[in-house]
Image (cartoon, rainbow, N blue to C red):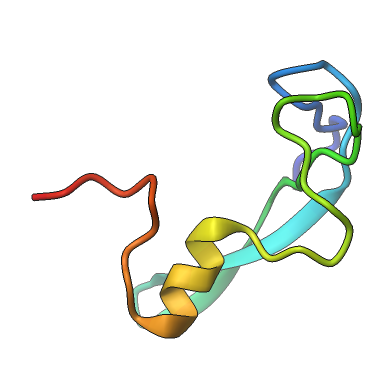
Length: 70
């Protein structure tokens, strides 16, 4: 596991750790990644309880605004 603390790439403030998962050889494996920035003055700020854009697209089956069109 990663023991270092995650920081926001935009403002440098420390952020929480979020557990995501990916499939490897047919099994779901946990991955610890940096969570959203909670600094209201940061350009990468995400409100408490707001769902990230990519996660919303996964649930609805649509494409997110940041996804590249092919």
